[in-house]
Amino acid sequence: MPDMGNGKQPNVIVFFTDQQRWDSTGIHGNPLGLTPVFDWMATQGTHLMHTFTCQPVCGPARACLQTGQYATKTGCYRNGIPLPPDCRTLAHHFRDAGYRTGYIGKWHLAGEEPVPPGQRAGYEYWLAANLLELSSQPYEAVVYDDAGDRIHLPGYRTDALADAAIRFVADNRTLPFFLFLSFLEPHQQNNTDNYPAPYGYEQRYTGRWMPPDLAELGGTAARHLGGYFGMVKRLDEALGRLFDTLRSFDLLDDTIVLFTSDHGCHFKTRNAEYKRSCHESSIRVPAALYGARFTGGGSVREMVSLIDLPPTLLDAAGIAIPAEMQGKSVLPLLRGERSQNRPQEAFVQISVTQVGRAIRTDRYKYGVVAPGKDPVRDSCSDLYEEAYLYDLHADPYELDNLILRDAAVPVVKELRQRLLRRMAEAGEAPATIQPASSRQGTTIES
Image (cartoon, rainbow, N blue to C red):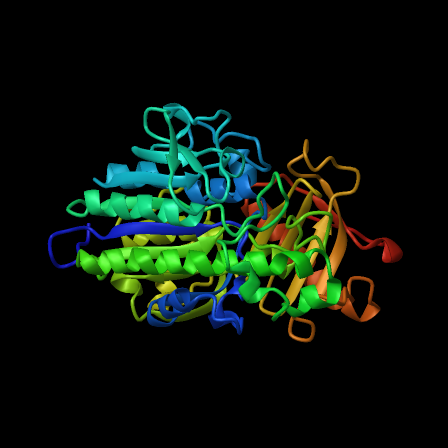
């Protein structure tokens, strides 16, 4: 077990936001100055430039990040399915290695509120709500403690959870600790269907810059983006306070901090809600690591999935990666190692709005949808039909679907095989993909 040169194992903090687009950050081109702390973290630490969710739905994405397994492997392929009690999580692995584990914020992997101890997936310290979007309001952060008692934390919800995380760090600073800090922001407030930024923040960003896909497609972006960006700004300020806490306790160098999100947001442009599609706006997320061996790590340009982050954290802490984890640690990439066994595309499973599958390569996005399947009842299918092809070099905002173009047939043929291979590697049953409706022909089977 490696230490930081002072006899202590590295602490680990996951700073996890909800529904945050990658292009809400300055390092990805947002001009509004929303994320100076994240941009510093990505520049001075390790920036995972091309990071994608493996399931653009809240609960399934969380199951993937806790277990390192695909949603169809754990069975948590849509919201409302509790994490099975026999699943081994990051908390279990870090506890076994002598870490104090803590969870603060949104859980979304239980069947009850408050979450009973048996559904906390191995976390010791607990200050969380299963459905934070239902238990709380922007200035009424309601969570539940270890005993299941209702706790009303003061302040704006982002600040309240950050305050709790700072207290956890202060109380456990002499121990190796693993803290998972899970925010609701910048997710919409469900009961009002708006994006409630702190007072005065929405006005700063309303009517200013808009990502090109949203400018073209409309949706609800014009009325929601100001609040959304205001929430992102406050999250970045909370991240800064957390780093300041680590500095004040001289823990900055020996604490690994991971920043990422569960999925993005397309503001009702790709379907009738905010996510659950194969598009960049739904699946691409910001991600960076800082501390220990990640400081000065540079930019990783390869495709990285949420499924890769659990083995990465264990690997960085010197904990053996369990065989059941389906992702790949990014640490070899920092050492300049390029393994042929590492996937060259991000693989995405989609539920709730469709039973869909997609891959994202350096250049292309290719997606399929299962006809006749119930996306709530069915986790997968034995038959899919091609639905999407985007050339991301020529069309980075995915405004021109090429799936019916005859000139795209050779590209589609290759991507079809790559997608089938990734589905099989994820543990899915054999499936058939048929060409898009206007050019039905020979199918290819796994």
